[in-house]
Length: 451
Image (cartoon, rainbow, N blue to C red; front, side, top):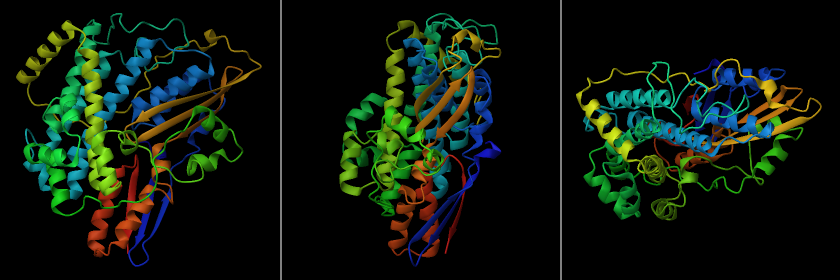
């Protein structure tokens, strides 16, 4: 994680239920991009924003292209979306297999089947890296590379990775399908599309949790057994109805830095992330009505998003018979392969190759062009805004999910206050505060103080 990421200092006072959230995040770090050509910005951006690097790169590419009046080809845009979905799967599995169990029930990790959590996550990480290589990471065909230096390579064309092996589009589709299979293996224990259709109510979720041997199912059973289903529920509304035009107006204002640091919409705090996106699924609709936005609803929203992302990737690959055969071959190869060594979160890359010819974009040197790129990252809506003039970036702004969700008066602050008002002991308040923070999920480290 970049040293510029900073951290959150969160303080909860039990007696008064007062919550204070302070951030040391260097939100003005993007000022280093001013005066630089866009291709250099694209290369340097991952050094500042390594977490959710795929979503960051997609938002950056979208913003730069919009500023230049360019549009990536439909196959490129579709592949970007698939990569963001794959990253969301990776991030959600990390939360569910590693982070939640540390607070809810540490023994869950050791008891879970089909394998302990860390080897499972090692496999997830390894396959995500392989997936990125398959679709051309670091090459001119990388879909995360902005399309301003010549014609965009068509995704259906073959991609030549660094290894020299030529991958066909069917192999890329198979890689996505293979990666999506991790959701069935480590979370749902059934076909994602079938799970989404069958688990459409609270009762259906409980039946699934009783039968499934996965870590998420055990987490759900533990939440119910401890009476924590509605823990942290509060009235902060979900972020909805936001538009590019509205964002442009807000980010162009003189007080834009204040908005970036503590964003509000239509006069109030908003929540962004899995719960906001999954709010239309029947299961989440039912849980919101019965339990509000507490822990059980948040856990269910993660599962729904896993199902949606995996189902989408499998559906895209399912149109190709060759992809299906390649997927089965990959399954066979993996069954014979030794267990992977645990690997750490890789440093994200923007996907831009060296030496992009920005001058080919044909900018009017006297005009300043603005572009906003949006990406639904694993933790919520990610906004990038760039202003380009004289072939140089004049201003670059990023509004990250953390600033919405960990606003001093936002959903985490109100959720922690609700827990404090419940009258639990100091020790239990600290445990539940850690759990609620994990459930909403900051993208930076945090320090918690409970008194």
